[in-house]
Image (cartoon, rainbow, N blue to C red; front, top):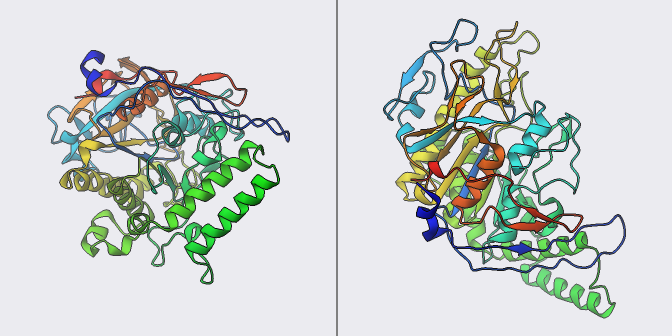
Length: 457
């Protein structure tokens, strides 16, 4: 599909959004925003961003190379799928049944070899200033995708635009790219750090004390606003203003039956919950479906809070630690969990008529080395890996790009993370050239890449 063919749902000419930067402890002017152009829509109403922290091996999942030499090709076999010509790892039989509903990007690449720097790039679409495990989370760095969506195309009612759960991920330092950064606290995600698989799963952040009703809390908020106005405190710091905005929105959520219902997993039939799997990740994927069904625009689901390698339940960083090996970890935990949750989410959305309007993005921060190391494991490899897309206007049963014979480098149609970011924004109907104001009050485009037009069907 050519860009001109998508003009019917990409009509915005430009956006100029003013953001406020915080200059130390001084009091800057309040954020100012100006929108130029008209509202428009894309094929996707929502995005479910399934972030595979640690970096899955592309050779052992969606880009097998059975003809590669020993020591490079996967220890597993290869399986034909429901999409003619597309093969995947033979440990993913349920995924094989839904491959006619997905697009694979087999030529994604970048140069960041550390988890925090590569993850920041994957979570924002912006390359970090340094490739360093100690990359710190600062307001100079770019905002999360969902925060950009909340800033430019927010939900226009009592729902959150951006929800993230069930962890704050880190590799030593907290991984940047999980919040609104210089866009302001008002655009941070509704962050839920409780386990959706827990019997008492609830939203403590939105729970009122028994002695305080929502009405009383609203009255207190109005009184505080009056005091602020009378004291001449309207020109307080942007950070404080953002907290106040976020607080006001949270009160609206407290009064929203739709928000409460969306997070009430106990209302789901037991058979549906079993289908997703009674695991933290399985129930997180089910919750994502409930959220987009309600109207939430962007959902970040973090696979694990740790990069992994030492326990089955951690992330995909399977170098081979403490005399463990990659393949037993994949076979016992990662691949079965992938094979249960992702096809279930795709099928469930499709059965409910939601897949065409919901873009699923399944990705990690990088892939794994083609060559096995001494531990019969694979190390970090950002030079080429695979990202899976489903729904939201992308083609079904399609592969964009290709890796070379050993899955080491893109062979054709390379895709930078910048381009992937532009593609997600385009799917949501947001012009990827839209500019926001960074902390230095300078214009910064929300993406430095170009949409991968070829993936749209």
